[in-house]
Length: 112
Length: 383
Image (cartoon, rainbow over all chains, first blue to last red; front, side, top):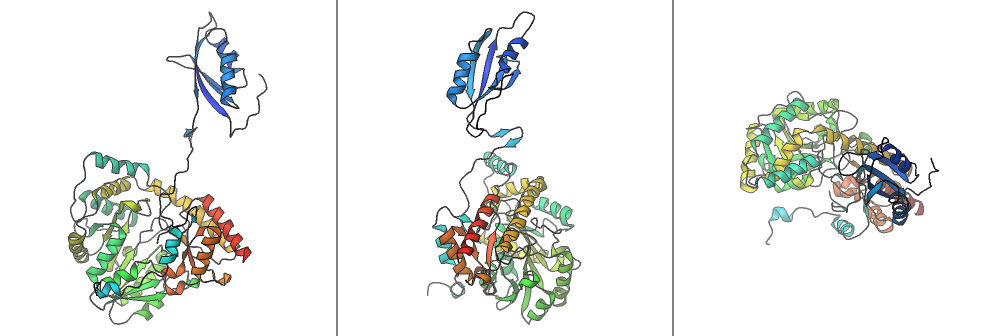
């Protein structure tokens, strides 16, 4: 496993990437999944049922960093047929934790 | 003279100008708000929305919907062992404010006196006076935790006193009474055959002991007009739903006034209140836990910076003394607002005996409380 790059968690950019794969004879998805999850940029990697095969969660310093990773490493990998990248815009709830965003005060400033 | 003598005689608020100053200022950390900072729990709001979608937009019975009155009766029986007949002894009102007004108009004859412990919620005196009665104030003391004592009631009783208005946990002091303290009060109340108008709107926000409705004490239910509602416990101030429980003759008299003046409480609020009672306690407990955390913080912080503050037992207010600053409560509040943009309410709004106190509401986020405490410390250090 490569060394994990240090990224400021407050400014980090995350993307959820759908990856469609041509499975390899006798190896299925495991081999290609291992090549993908070995990149330190990959935070999570899941094999899914449905319209695509792997869901890969990637974190980078900027949108450009993540885009470069997808273009240079992921899309060009052998047996990867197609990718679709979704950048995470706002977290509302994660692992049971709700992230509240400040709303303007609705009460009057003073009352009895 | 176009205005009635009765209304004209009402004393104007001494801190109207201060309120205007606060309302006109931006980016203020306000500890001056008398309502929860939580939004009404979602399942209650959702039910209000659903009732509108389902077309519930009509009047209800004058007394309020059967479902809500029966739900309140069941809740009070389970929670406090209080038994009221939902047909004759419960009325749904537009907040406790309306219930208070109805109670006074139903029981007060011209010249009758009502005892009111001071500090008091601002509407109490005017409610008595608008009904033609006379408000007689009993000054409570810091060393008694701002609680009225049986002896004080005994001494204040004179001919013409019809009843006493109790509010616990109290706005503005947060003071509340244990069962034992209420029992002591009930003896003197029975001795003088007084009615009790008991505003218990903050009952679910009692921290150090279980709340006891005074009506639940032996021999008291027949003389207690019990006022409560949904505003504080369920963070539903804007829904405007309160209720009164009491002897059938008094509730009947209050219903008579209510049907000619208010007709009924708004149906959307009643439907929302019914939902609140279906699953009442988890939301309330979560809010109460957070209020309690803030209460302990703010009392500690105020005493640390030299503003003497007792530990209140309930509601979401503390009532520290600002005497050590050498300023009146109005000057303190005005200067703190102008220099540090922190709003508190001068105690004088709640009675003449409170000139050295300010009311601080901890219905504000923990971060706001910490920042406000730091700014108050800066303000006091600069003096």
